[in-house]
Image (cartoon, rainbow, N blue to C red; front, side, top):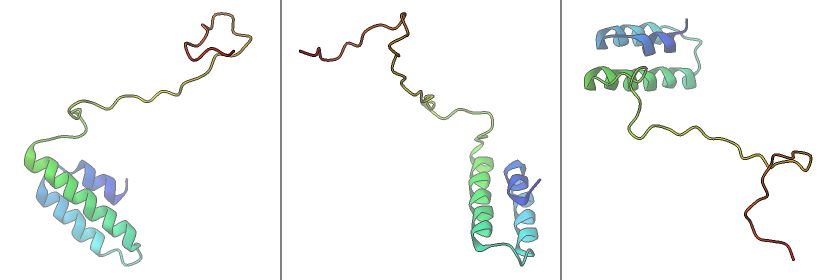
Length: 88
Protein backbone atom coordinates (compact mmCIF):
# COMPACT_ATOMS: atom_id res chain seq x y z
CA UNK A 1 0.00 0.00 0.00
CA UNK A 2 1.33 3.43 -0.89
CA UNK A 3 1.72 6.48 1.30
CA UNK A 4 -1.30 8.24 -0.17
CA UNK A 5 -3.51 5.26 0.60
CA UNK A 6 -2.10 5.13 4.12
CA UNK A 7 -3.03 8.81 4.56
CA UNK A 8 -6.56 8.09 3.29
CA UNK A 9 -6.89 5.30 5.84
CA UNK A 10 -5.43 7.27 8.77
CA UNK A 11 -7.73 7.61 11.76
CA UNK A 12 -6.07 10.51 13.63
CA UNK A 13 -4.46 13.82 12.79
CA UNK A 14 -1.25 12.70 14.51
CA UNK A 15 -1.08 9.64 12.28
CA UNK A 16 -1.47 11.85 9.20
CA UNK A 17 1.36 14.13 10.36
CA UNK A 18 3.56 11.14 11.01
CA UNK A 19 2.92 9.85 7.49
CA UNK A 20 3.68 13.26 5.95
CA UNK A 21 6.98 13.37 7.84
CA UNK A 22 7.75 9.90 6.51
CA UNK A 23 6.98 11.14 2.98
CA UNK A 24 9.25 14.16 3.34
CA UNK A 25 12.17 11.75 3.63
CA UNK A 26 11.51 10.34 0.14
CA UNK A 27 14.04 12.41 -1.82
CA UNK A 28 13.24 10.81 -5.18
CA UNK A 29 9.50 11.54 -5.07
CA UNK A 30 8.19 13.98 -7.67
CA UNK A 31 6.81 17.33 -6.50
CA UNK A 32 3.46 16.35 -8.01
CA UNK A 33 3.41 13.25 -5.80
CA UNK A 34 4.31 15.26 -2.70
CA UNK A 35 1.52 17.74 -3.46
CA UNK A 36 -0.94 14.86 -3.78
CA UNK A 37 0.10 13.61 -0.33
CA UNK A 38 -0.45 17.06 1.15
CA UNK A 39 -3.80 17.46 -0.59
CA UNK A 40 -4.96 14.05 0.58
CA UNK A 41 -3.78 14.85 4.12
CA UNK A 42 -5.75 18.12 4.16
CA UNK A 43 -8.87 16.37 2.88
CA UNK A 44 -8.56 13.51 5.37
CA UNK A 45 -7.83 15.89 8.28
CA UNK A 46 -10.98 17.83 7.39
CA UNK A 47 -12.98 14.59 7.36
CA UNK A 48 -11.64 13.64 10.80
CA UNK A 49 -12.25 17.09 12.32
CA UNK A 50 -15.78 17.47 10.93
CA UNK A 51 -16.74 13.86 11.54
CA UNK A 52 -17.42 13.17 7.88
CA UNK A 53 -16.25 9.83 6.60
CA UNK A 54 -16.23 9.89 2.80
CA UNK A 55 -16.03 6.12 2.69
CA UNK A 56 -19.44 5.58 4.31
CA UNK A 57 -21.48 8.75 3.81
CA UNK A 58 -23.09 9.85 0.56
CA UNK A 59 -22.90 13.48 -0.44
CA UNK A 60 -26.12 15.47 -0.20
CA UNK A 61 -28.15 14.99 -3.34
CA UNK A 62 -26.06 12.01 -4.37
CA UNK A 63 -24.39 11.71 -7.71
CA UNK A 64 -26.54 10.31 -10.46
CA UNK A 65 -25.18 7.51 -12.52
CA UNK A 66 -24.64 8.74 -16.03
CA UNK A 67 -25.97 6.50 -18.73
CA UNK A 68 -25.21 6.64 -22.38
CA UNK A 69 -28.19 6.91 -24.72
CA UNK A 70 -28.23 4.19 -27.30
CA UNK A 71 -30.27 4.55 -30.46
CA UNK A 72 -32.34 1.53 -31.38
CA UNK A 73 -31.14 -0.30 -34.47
CA UNK A 74 -33.30 -0.92 -37.51
CA UNK A 75 -33.26 -4.66 -36.86
CA UNK A 76 -34.49 -4.22 -33.29
CA UNK A 77 -38.26 -4.80 -33.63
CA UNK A 78 -38.98 -4.03 -29.98
CA UNK A 79 -37.62 -0.51 -30.35
CA UNK A 80 -40.20 2.26 -30.24
CA UNK A 81 -40.08 5.04 -32.83
CA UNK A 82 -38.56 8.28 -31.63
CA UNK A 83 -40.80 11.14 -30.57
CA UNK A 84 -38.70 13.68 -32.44
CA UNK A 85 -39.65 15.73 -35.48
CA UNK A 86 -41.32 13.85 -38.29
CA UNK A 87 -39.59 13.83 -41.63
CA UNK A 88 -41.56 15.21 -44.59
